[in-house]
Every structure is written in C-alpha cells, then in structure tokens.
Length: 307
Image 1 (cartoon, helix red, strand yellow):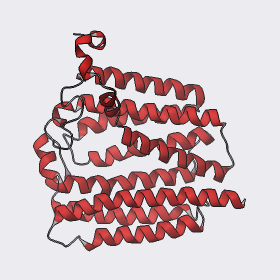
Image 2 (tube, one colour):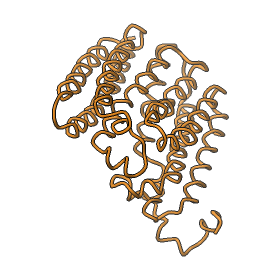
Image 3 (cartoon, helix red, strand yellow):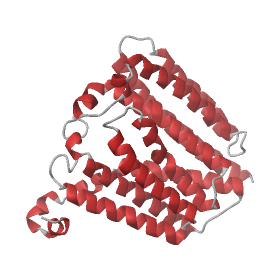
Image 4 (cartoon, helix red, strand yellow):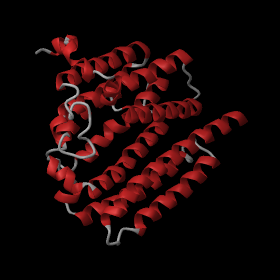
C-alpha cells in the first residue's frame, strides 16, 4: 500500500490519533528549540540594533519549528525498529505500530519542505541554507551514524544547536559573534547531557544496536569527557558578558549555576554508583540550561528597560 493510500485508508483511523501525530514530531525538542531560538534572536537583536516585525518573528519561528518537527518525524521513521527494542522509546507511535513508517516519512518530508519554503519567503538565504544543513545532518548523517560510531553524539550536537543560528541569522543576515557564542554553548551543553544518558542506559542502547561511548570507549573515558565538556561549557557560557550580550544578572547567574553544575559533575566522578551519578548529571544539565537561558532572558529585559 502506498503512503497516499495509507493516508486515505479509513481502516487505519484508530491509529490516527492526534496525540500520536504530535508525538511523531518530538514536541518537547521542538518547543525547546523554538524557545532558545527566540531568546537568541532577542539578544542578538538587542546587541546589534536589528529588528524584525512581529509577523516576521512569528514566521521565522514557525519555520524553525516546522524544520525541527520534520526532522523528528523522519528520525522516528528511520529508527522505529531500534526504538521498539528500548524501554524509553518502545511506545513511540511508529515503534508501537500505531502509525506506519511511510506516514512518518511523508509527514517528515512535508514539514521539512514547508519549513524551507516558509523561511525562503521570510528570511535571508543564509538562514535557509543553515536550515537545510540542519535537516540533512540530523537525518542523513547523525541518525544512521548512531549505529556505527559513538562520535555521533558530537555530530548530532550541531543540528541540535543550529536553530540558534537559524534564528539569529534571520535577524542580521550573517553569523554574529554573539550568535556563534550561543550556538557554541548549546553544542557543548549537549555533550555531557547525552553522554550521561548513555552511561545509565548503556546496556539498553547497546542491546538496541546503538554505539555509545560508555561501551566502545570505556566508562572512565566517558566520565572524563563529561567532566571536561562541563568545564568547557561553563567557560564558554561566561563569554557572553565580555561580548556585550549580557550584564550583571546573567553573568552572576551563569557563574553560580555553572559552579553548581561543575561541582555536581565532579563530586560523583570517583563514586561507585556510576548510573546514579550519570542520572544526576543528566537532570542537573536540564536545570543548568533552564537557569542559564532564563537568566539571559531576564538580563535582556532588565537591560532593555534601562536603555
């Protein structure tokens, strides 16, 4: 049966629940990408004096959202067999058999195409090019690479952070130092975040067919890499102040939450319960990211009011 026939086949209606279709687009990742992109756009706009109309803001963010949604659907379609082998992903719509892989490909392809068309109408060519790079690198490089090399986590961090540059280049038409710094923060943040997951779920990932650092490079190597990338993350996050993109509120918050996160990572490094430590690092990275970007937004608002 062709994808079109599946779409029209009423016998499949019970599987076509709105919740499953939304899940297929990875809404949590999409929301995070849009929020971070919007915040980055505001900061770069304030720093450079560039501005977009409210309508353009909405359209650019919609294009970014559609791109992330499309890549998510294509990823689920490509990995559904592997997802079915893992507890954390086995209930995803395609892995659980509620939606066919063909639908994932059709939905993902259409969303990705619509994203490019929308951004081509509302943003500079550089933004469209970065969007295309994000889509291709995530779907065609990162997704299959996860089964072949543990270095996929580094490759995947790039498209994961590109919504920042997609948003900031829509503001300025070029890559600014502030946008590049924010992009670097997001890239580096993903490394300890995802490596931590592969420690406390390494057996599950390995059994499903993924290559993870904790197995292929060793647990000690992975733990050391988490400590090193955390230190680099904190250092890069503090560069926004000298670049003129943030003031006292952000710089203070970044220093405090950075120190907290670094201590959390270092404190359990030599412990015996690696799985528990890795889970704390994973959860701590989420807290760190939330505090960092919320303080950045607050800083921008306060500085704007004082301007």
